[in-house]
Length: 255
Image (tube, rainbow, N blue to C red; front, side, top):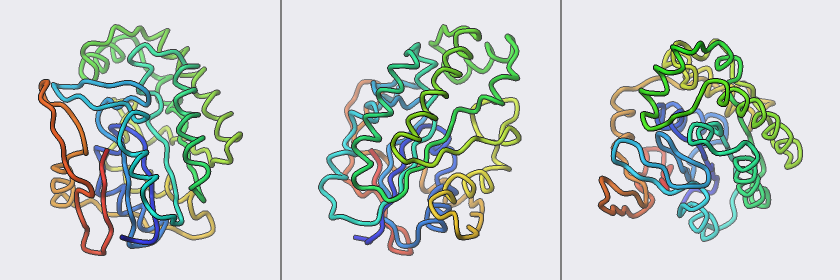
């Protein structure tokens, strides 16, 4: 097992750019890495989420925490991102903040570096009613969230997240407005290498981190990896972890 570790907590922004994220993590924190991730489209920090027939446990209820506790100590860098996902499920800003704080409480003792991304407020603030309804229907078809509630809750949650980052010694990263396009919450493919270099480069601020490169083959290969536990149309599926060993000796475990 590698003697350096990365913990990634998030949702679709990680899942959509797995190869870029993993390569950026190795560029920022060294190689090989023990990569432990809880991610996936629509992922919630504190409750089960069901998207297109696939159900994942909340990040707090996932097997990631038992896996982390069972690993030997190692220099560890952590990322918490996609924190606004639960707004779409109608969860209050204060409840989401409590879930995020529980993650930070468990991670702080084992992590040397923690990075937290703010919500992409600059992008969200440009939303009009029609574009909001279109994106909500495409990305979260069962949601009945209104634009006014979403923006008010996102602003409140962003303030909580910023405060928690300071309280727990985490580096806060503000997403760049130019990272997003018509889709206000997902980083555009063309900007993924630079965005993840900036986000994960906060683990090693004294070094000029190289940007990762897109690879369709590696992306497709990593997208096929299964988490430890999920349901597909109500059928339980389980996968032993680590799910993959990379050519540099890094291990990937998904929860």
